[in-house]
Amino acid sequence: MAAINGPWQQVPGPGGGTAPFYMIRFDKRGVCTSPSSLRHLVQAAGEATDVFLFSHGWNNTWEAATRHYLEFIDQFNQQYAEGWHPPARDYRPVLVGVNWPSTVLVPRDERGPDIAGGQRDPSTGEDLALELIAESLEEGAAARLYELAGHAELSGERALELARLVAPALTGLEDELGDGRDATITPEDLLRWWAAMPSEDPAEPVERGGFVEDEPVGADRAPETAGLLDKLNPRNLIRSATVLLMKDRAGRVGGAGVRSMLHDLLDSSPDSRVRLIGHSYGGKVVLSALAHGSAPKRPVESVLLLQPATSAKCFADPDREHPAGGYRPALDRARQPVMTTFSRHDVPLTRLFHLAARRASDTREAVIAGAPSEYAALGGFGPQDTSSVTVVDAVTAPKRYVLPSTEVLAIRADAVINGHGDVQNAATAWALLCQVME
Image: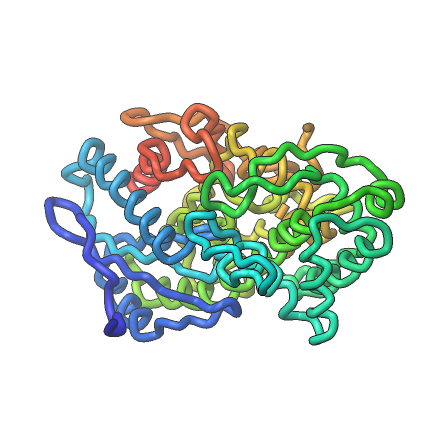
């Protein structure tokens, strides 16, 4: 297949025309792997009135990510045709979707066959997750990781041994926002969280997003009792560790390559309105791009976070005991208030997220995550510990959102978002159009 050096495709645009839609790929370090298309995008952005930059969450293949982008664009075009056509100003959009290596958990119908007595099929979710952890280990330790993870249950010293192998992969990661807090985790921490998870084999992911719809139990059991005496399912530990590793990857991709792309877009199109839209870990991607390092030369126009898998305290006010939330700089780098959804129907972000994200750096979003847990997710509970937020119920067309004087507009979306992946719908597209119509 020939390399794409421009738009991935043309999508329906205003007035019966088309708009260029670019897909820009990044590797796990945040290095852009489609530089020719990026150069073409930066040039095209100079002629646009509005540049839309989308990021998917984790566990999205290329096919899934592009399908979700196109579904959302279709929903937006329908809202545009019904609510803002003809537009009240000149409107020439350019669209770009980020594609980052986020796939770990693979639904069964996308897996290869199980082969009894041999090596696991490398297309399975468990193996992809194990490989992600094993990358940071020496050869002997990696071999032992695979051996222990192959058991249906572990207890006693073997459970602790697996926790000791996994812990270093989750420790000492560079904080992409540079506030100095270490992403530390101990084997004892892992045992405690491991024991808090359901003991049965995890269910298949109900929807793309990388979480499973299990009910957490026993979260307060002590590790010396639960972790060393109970029989624990290694798959639960591997999946929990993967939540953190992919979270860190989302921040790394956003704070490196996507940040560079964003600054180039803002520099090359001084009159365009640049808009960021992120779902799940994609919210972390776009927030890292905006908040990391020095501020861009001019602010983005708007930010829309759809069920973001980031700390609910990422915008928190500083106090005598805590620094400001790690993504608070983003609030000063967007002209409109940051708009973010949260829903009680989002099982991963209300019931599971805080069980996995429990490093010191996972609060206030330095490196994701009831009264909400200290480690609660933004997309599950809305912004916490910030005075600069206005909370409203979701609205649908033709009623418009009134942008507040606060820096964050939190949308209680229980009535319009029924699950973590339920974000390609008329209500979320309308929220974006309300930002565009301002």
